[in-house]
Image (cartoon, rainbow over all chains, first blue to last red):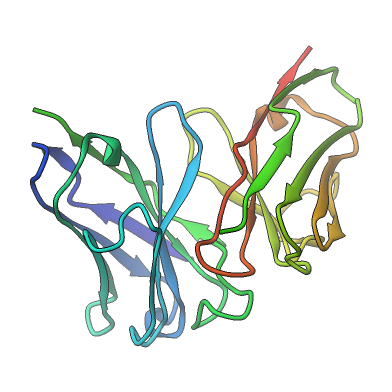
Length: 124
Length: 107
């Protein structure tokens, strides 16, 4: 059974940093692209970032480009999101979502399994 | 970036009704469209990918159709457990945009 467990969320001041993790099990982690998707309180879903199975290709939403960095450690079956220069509008539940294939280009980057999410609150 | 527009933003229907939600892309996306269901307080779940392919374990009362810019999600006979917000997402090209959601309630 596919399992994705996010951690690392919490309260951080504007301008601060946080690193989220997503621990995966139940599937060959390095063979699949993974995305981060967030949901602000009471709002809809927003795609944030994605990374290919090998880690060689990364993608970012314009709203986080230059501030967030996605990475993965396939030896530890873990995905990361390093978030710097955080703003109030980054406050959200952050979900990791497994893709159906090892890459995200060419029409393959949707989430077929999702974690439970971790809440990030940016506030002074 | 591609914009995804869902309609309606909310609807109320009776148990057993046929429910249709539409999603329109600002440019052609072939059939690179997914539908998700998010029940209140829960994690989003994939219903449909490639515009019309049913994800494993999803009840057959859910169906999807469309190609290019116009897509629909249909619930053939609404059940109480279908109360949720439904989102479309294009995955034709980054950034992979979601629609704003359609909230489905029971009348």
